[in-house]
Image 1 (cartoon, rainbow, N blue to C red):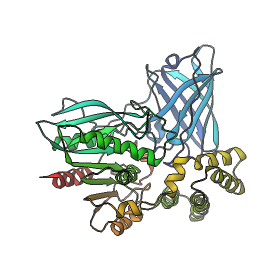
Image 2: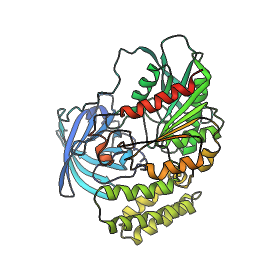
Image 3: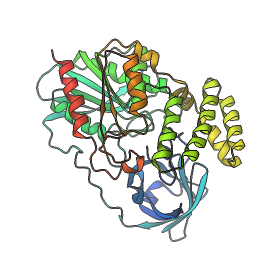
Image 4: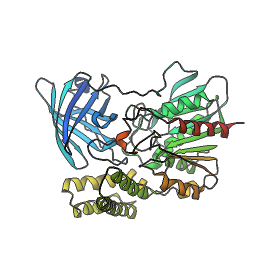
Length: 457
């Protein structure tokens, strides 16, 4: 959900990681690595922060982007690599003899730029995130693990917060959206799921939130998973929550953000039986329609000329049609998408990369999926909330469809809010890190009040 030097789709493919060299471990790279890239007439700072456990995040301070999850560092054959799945980017470079610089290239979306990273003291300013909950809390918090019986080897690291008192309490399972997300749905130092858990638990609702498979405290292969797999993780979390004596199994619901709003109804089709559901910027249009509209709105908001917007959208429609027509055949998608990209002037390497990304099993499933059936078959109270300035799941595209598919649902469009439900100016992703507010008070009150009312005895 971040963008670095070119606008990247929120639906970026996840890259594989090479095995590290035993001679040079990630611990040797602990610290801050900072440099600058020249792009579009700008000089932009790039920072990789490696802590003493090897956990790494990336910052683009001049774009207000901070805390983007990184896979790595890894070292192989003397080459240091940082992979950034959320933006489809990677850095590869060699280390100087004194160990103080990494000289290499930063690549994203077919663009490769030279980048020299220097080891430095902490130079990235600490951003303010005043809503992030801080102890002491007036409720209990417990870290737990949850096995997914439908996916051997997948164990979800999770946190359960329980209101004060004996219960049994109504409860919610929080489900993250696209991309590798931790249990707090951390993005650019914002922790919206921690804020949601705090707000709900203070009002008497137990909350379970979990790391995506293969992320942080969870096992499994994120890159190999499809939307159906992620839905099965949500079902496993839901089923586990029903076993807790502090929780009323008849009053458990699901709250999904973005693509999490797709996973939740699929989990119901898999057998989960929530008593209610909240969709935060949940798609009602198909994945192909969402991506086409994203492209149009992002390029328009970025100031592109109308003819450029339309040309880009024409190309996007061709890509989406190729994916939908061959949704069950990854190789066919790769061939057709690569050919379309070459025909439209992409370099062979960039065309091949685009073909590989769009042939990914998760991507094909997302693009071909139409939520209409799963939404129509829901027979539970539903709240669907959208931000009026959301460019990723646009309210004007999805709210009318939601009302059509679920006439009995509560559908709310909140003015001035973006995809993360922050108060926004343009809605572009470049604003996400610049805005101090994690969740606008209007969305918190809308959702929490609805859940409390819906779960009241």
